[in-house]
Image 1 (cartoon, rainbow, N blue to C red):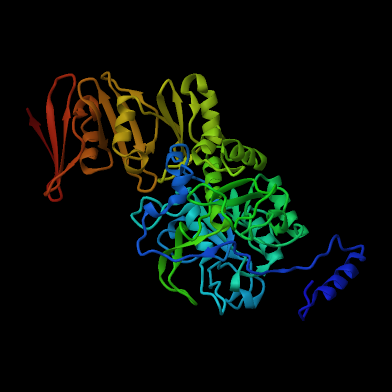
Image 2 (image 1 turned 45 degrees about the vertical axis):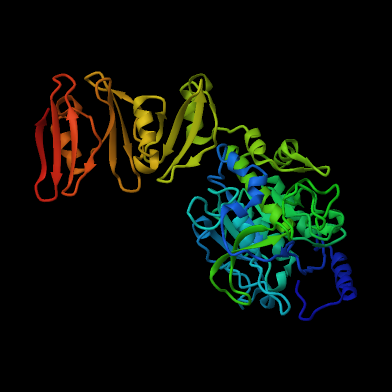
Amino acid sequence: MESDTMLDKAEQQAVVETLEKDPAVESAEPDLIVVNGLAAHAASAPNDRYWNYQWGPRNIGVPSAWSHGTGNGVVIGIADTGQINHPDLNQRTVRGYDFLSDLYHSRDGNGRDGNPQDEGDWSPGRPNWWHGSHVAGIAAAHTNNRTGIAGVAPDARIQHARVLGADGRGYISDIADGVMWSAGIAIPGVPRNTTPAKVVNLSEAWDAPTCEPVMQNAVNRMHKIGVPLVVAAGNAGKSANLAAPANCGGAIVVAATSSHNRITGYSNWGPMVDVAAPGGDTNAPIWSTVNTGKFSLGAPSYGDLSGTSMAAPHVSGVIALMKERNPNIGVEAIRKTLRDTGVNVNGYRKVDAVRAARAVAPTTRGAIATYYKSKGGAGVYGNPTTGERDTGVGGVVQHFVKNGRTTKLYWSSRTGVREVRTWTGIGSRHEGLGGARAVGIPFNNEQRTATGGYYQSFVDPRSGKTTKILWSARTGAQPIVESSGIGRVWVRNGYETKAGYPITPEVRTSTGAYQRFQNIRTGERTQYTWTPRGGVKVTRIK
């Protein structure tokens, strides 16, 4: 229920006691406003924006962990101040929601809505921190795009639930709804989340002697469906037992370390802390994505903050790597793995991204699992070394290794499950040409030709372009784009049996393109030359 006026503590307690006497009321508690819930400290920003400034991911071994997982297929929920337009975040962000019900704190004048844009967390005495975007960048900023910074889980997606507004304030009930919605739990009056998160980051901490029931209920419901809530331990330099949501049972609580591998002086501590991660300090803060605007939106930028708020998304990113390898890994298995693989720092376990990701055995599922088992499983393909990953052109791929040989099982709704054996001539050529993104996904498995060679067909689901890679002992492996002008004439002339195996790829020239072929029975070589005006001409070559 909502009051038309602000109530003091005594008035709140009186209302609670009255409501609890009503047999129709399950429980009652004051819906408090979180004040200064952002568990971060501002710090000065240098002029440059390079990976070299990101000591945090390097400190926990993130680059080496990317060989085990990049967060592909995983959505990371960011329950915070909302999102901003930023080149390092835009391509990683999926649709979120604004849960701020209070008009004053929301600053957008319309309460809960489908636009989670950060309207600014400034107060009269403090400019914007752009806290939510800073947290999001640490977890999953776009990587290898020649812009700014790298995220811990560079192929994960980000989803913002805006739960804090002006001065970093928001109702606990809004925060609880925000984290549950992020995890895919239905919230009355809010549209269904069609891209639910597999891990939710809540980089906030507020004074509370016990975890509020509404918040504990949220953690419990998320725990039940296997979605961890990663929270900041808090920055008061005291027991985390006295800060929520760190004192909520079941949350994964993160303390902060410095670049010198010590628990920072500001970080909360105690038995509620599960792990530690880089949070930085004034001497070596944490770089991430922000905005230049001090009291309104400005231009995309980069800046630094320090706090357990910054430590938490390092851990959320590592969990995304783990979730890629095994989407079904539960909260307690995640907690145990992070602790068991962590490095001792002042009696706490600092996360080790490489060991944590590697410790999670990838699993098979769905159509790939069915195919894998039906064809002989580990005896034929070996064990999976990755979880399912987005191909970038439609469908997914999973890697398997046996005796040092990698087989990739691809699935799409158009092709079903097909395999690329990367150690064969055809598979190696597919990899060398750029794999699925450049050539397409396999439309069939390797097939024997009538002339003693092999072929495999590939399709790009985006464009419909079809490519065949042919191999013979005499010609090696080369591609032919069957949907090109040269490819269509080659098909018309009798495929490899009559027209020959390709001995070069299609080569672009200033006037068109050409490709060369050899008939492996007769040894005859031909060149197919294409020009826009003349079409395709076939000539014999020596």
